[in-house]
Length: 267
Image 1 (cartoon, rainbow, N blue to C red):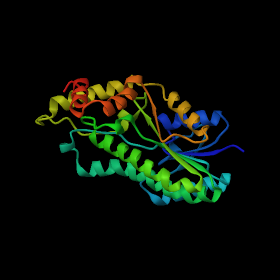
Image 2: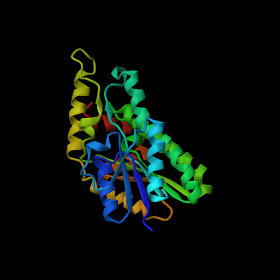
Image 3: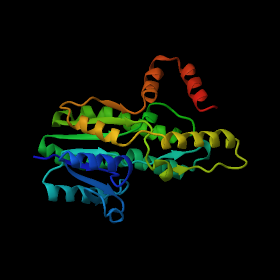
Image 4: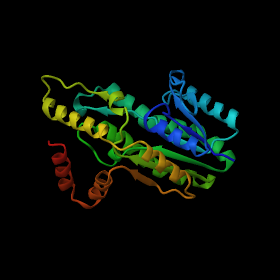
């Protein structure tokens, strides 16, 4: 029997690549979008879901179960970028980012757990970020939201273990997607004390995304996780130095690591 997969944020970028790859591998795939009608050419099922709206979450999951009879894999991929000096980012934008990157995945997890418990099986994959392992300058809110999802997954895994449901994190580095265009940018203010360092860092971040890896690598990594009987707690996917930066954070003194980051961002 083909496994049934639900991917939040499946209309573009990494989510779309994962959906197409898994469809090719024979999975029954449902992606989600807040406006699925805008993507008529999608090569897999696309259902309406907004991670900030519990009603749409319940309706989307009910649709999947009604059509396919089960739900084997949830991939929490929907996410939003945000940049800016923390002092200058409006509180409402910080809260909105956490709604999408942290509270949204939790809502979807809570909604799928009853079905997976009935099945006595299931896998939940939370797409986080290598940025969630460190506080990055002018990406602090994004780092915090993804880091929070990493940590809560560690706790969630232990709580759902008795139900034969597995949960894991997959943290990508920079990939060539449209996330830079869709994220919230705090404006570079003319009279801001952060004008030059933030402006320079913003240009560097956009260059990293534009020169990022092919999203197909994430799709392949997700497929390997799904094919693993007992997934690890954390996976990292990206450039060697991006993954190695997590190792360096563990072994270097705090200030040495901080100086390394500042040098990288030319701060």
